[in-house]
Amino acid sequence: MTVGIIGAGNIGGTLARLLVARGHDVALANSRGPNTLRDLAGEIGARPATIKEAARTAEIVILAVPERAVTQLPDDLFSGVPDDVVVIDAGNYYSARDGRIAAIEEGQVESAWVAEQLGRPVVKVFNNIISTSLLENGRPKGAAGRIALPVSGDPPAGRVKVMRLVEELGFDAVDAGSLAESWRQQPGTPAYIQDFDAPRLETALAAAERSRIPEYRSAANDAASAYFHRRR
Image 1: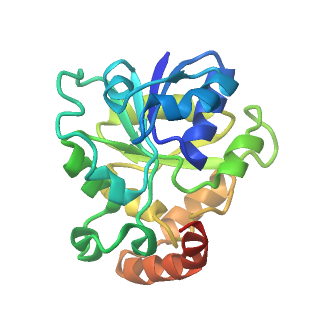
Image 2: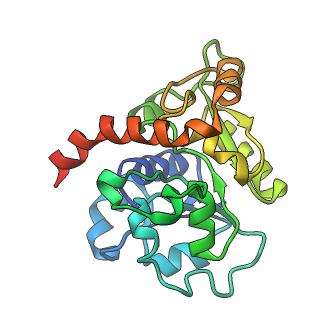
């Protein structure tokens, strides 16, 4: 399968490495251009690409960029891309890094905002696991303690396609419903970066309370602020 990855940071680079290792053709792109990716792409066997090449030559496109970068993507990024190409949103919103995004602060689900900016449906996954765990902790199906990842998004056929990919990478895929339900896996929620197995993940997703989203967001933002400041 051909996969385009936009964003070569911790999650994007890790997914590129894992997918190439499983025989997929990966086009890896970032905002600075293909020349800046030649060393990483050469190391892992991916193809350095432009953002448009990654979006327009793949069967699955993974968006792994900070929320603030979504509005900086080309307006015509998915122009001419067939409807059956699935777009994965692997990102999260942190105001400490991204600045204040009013629509999200006022209640819009993070990935619904991303879908609105892209003009495409998205499937949310890979946002609630840290890159080291994603790289190191995949296990064969049926293995004790296998980590589960929530997959939410529209349309259902796209969600199913992504769930198969999650399983291939060594994780149990939990169907977390439509994109409207993806708030349950946003930063700070009970399911966020916990490396739960499937039963515990399902319990954590169900335990999330929509009225507490501002509280979840604030706690996650406070916890991550020091990290973001170190990276500046």
